[in-house]
Length: 145
Image (tube, rainbow, N blue to C red; front, side, top):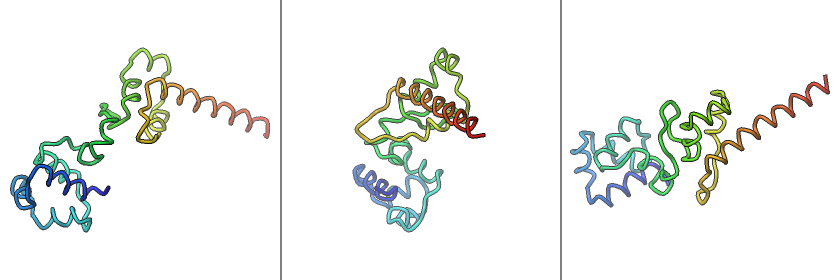
């Protein structure tokens, strides 16, 4: 579902007209209409205003409430899966694993099906697998040199 469709759906669920929402958030109704119809791409500031005007969290508006339940905001890393958030917030685990910023970015790029919510252990094992594959690749390169 496109962001414009999500905005329209959320606005209608709230029982607010385009004009009512545009007045509430102090934006041009024509621009709101263009965004809802997919004719214009919204800025993040606009999305925040719309979410506030509809009394929603911005991530629920952007990701859709069915998807955003699997994500949580972590300082310095944005919205991540709950399991990755737990890993990043576990000081002992982070000290033990000592992931680099590059490794964290790779973990953030992992996407799974909507029916699966990856756990903290999933991300620990993914990090170990990533490191194992790098070691195997480096060994292979050394043998070929």
